[in-house]
Each structure stands twice: as structure tokens, then as C-alpha cells.
Image (tube, rainbow, N blue to C red; front, top):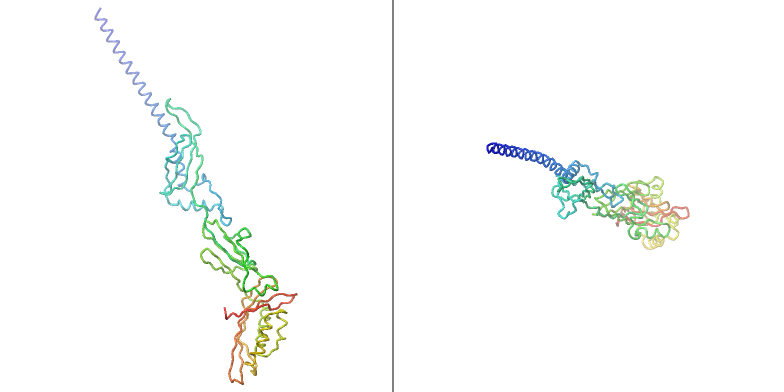
Length: 367
């Protein structure tokens, strides 16, 4: 009887041990497989994997997730900041780091870098969550925002032009929105302004530019003229063009008449018709005739050479200027000498009562 009990007890324990081992093995393999699987799921659900996708997208040049503001100046393209940003990261390695002050597990924040330069801030958003192994949870993530970091336009320029001209910055015309200060009088037009409207100098201020712009100025006829640049200041004066033949002939003829009054070959009455009725020049001619004309008395018939009219500027429908040049040679028999006189003057013509007359003249050799 004792032998049977011993055999039965030994068999029981052998069976028990085998059962325990089978159970342990089952749970070991089962739990090991489940844990490994769940851990893989957990690992794959980490937000860093989403950030790797963000990095790869930016590295490829795709910035569609980034919101770039429009340019701060109407003279530059709206996507100029995006273009500058793209150029700034070209050829650089994009990476990310978690923001050390990001504590919201449902909306973690990461910083993007191009090499060592901080270029953007990325915020993720947990769109769903499910438990895992009773102690963990996994989330599905979406990119809530990618905010690029860049400097907006801070460059500024000043443009000074006559009010009858137009200025363009990067092909866009400036207007009253850019006007700075009051119009400025041109000193050369002080006398002319008594008879007709004259141009004034306007100053335009253009700010908020990202880069040095292209500035173009056109005159009243639509011709592109030269612009003088000094740092951030652009200045355009009056640029002469080819003189129409009728205006050139008239200007040279009138200038010769004035020269002949100086030489005593014509009387003052000969030039009064093409001067303004109250011209300041008339008293000057009278003083010259009365005091200095004797120096050229008795000369032979003068000869003219190198006649030219140039630098025609039409300021408006009632005002233009033209430069006249010629040399006049006279033999003075009483003094047995040859005198050569050069005329190089700018004549300002105005339309008064439908007639073109000289309002002012400037000696170009004195400039």
C-alpha cells in the first residue's frame, strides 16, 4: 500500500511540474510576443517619427506646411520671404530637437535647425489615444503648425525726382503713398515760375524692402533717364534729349540776335519780341549798351562756327529749355585784333498768351 502511495505521489508531482513548466512556457512565449509587439507599436507611435517626416520634407525643399507672411513692401513679391528662407537653408542639414520647455504631452513642441541655425518651430497634436498593456498608451499624431523663423524687410531708400517724372521700384510705380515731406522748389526755375507752372522736386520714401531694389525713372515723355545713386538715396535731375529741328533753329537764331545786340549789330528792339514783356534781361542789355558796347564798335561782319542746340528738356506743355552753343569771330580794325566770343547758354522758354518767349537764361560756362 505504501509503495502505491509513493508511486502515485511521485507521478502527481511529476505531472504538476510538467504542467507548471508548460504554463510558464506558454505565458513566457505569449507575454514575450505580446510585449514585443506592443513595444514595437509603442515605439512606432512616438512623435519623433513624425518629426523625422517633417525633417525629410523640409530637406527636400517642400515648405508647404510653413506659413510665410506677405512682403512688408508692395514693391516686392509676396513670396520673397519664402524665397529667402529657401536660399538660406539650401545645402544645409536639417535636424530637430525637442523644446526643453515643452511639457504638454498632447502637443509637444520641437525646434528645426539648418546646421546650427534655428529655422522653425513645430507643434504636433495628438489626434487619438488608445491604451496599451494597461500601463501605456499610444497616440496618432498630426502636424499642428510649422512656424518658420525669418527676418522681414527692413531696407529703405529715398528717391528724389521732378514732379513731372515717374519713378519705379522693382517695376512698381511710386505714388502719393510714398511721398515724404513737401515739394521742393528748383532754384533754376525761380524766375520762370513768375510766368508758368514749373516742376518741383518730390521726395519718396520706400521702406520695408528685403533687398536692394532696382530703381528706374522716366521723364515726362516716357524716356528712361539716368539716376544718380548715393548709398540708399536715388536722385534724378532733368536729362536733355535731342532738340526738335524747329526749336533748334529758333533757339540758335534768337541766341544770335542776342549776341548781335551785345556787338551793336542789332538794336534792343530786335530781341524784345522773344523776351517776356517785363524781362529782367532788358535793363541789363540797356546798361551794357550804354556803358560797354563801345569795346566792339567798328568791327567787321562777324562769322559764326560750331553752332549747336542740345539738351532739350520739355518740362510741361508751357515750358522747355534748350542749350545753345556757337563761336563768333569778329575783327576789330581800330584795335587791330580779332575777338572770339563763345555763347554757351541755357535758354528757358515759356508759353505766354500763345507765344513762346525767353523767360530766363543761364551761362553754362559758369556752372
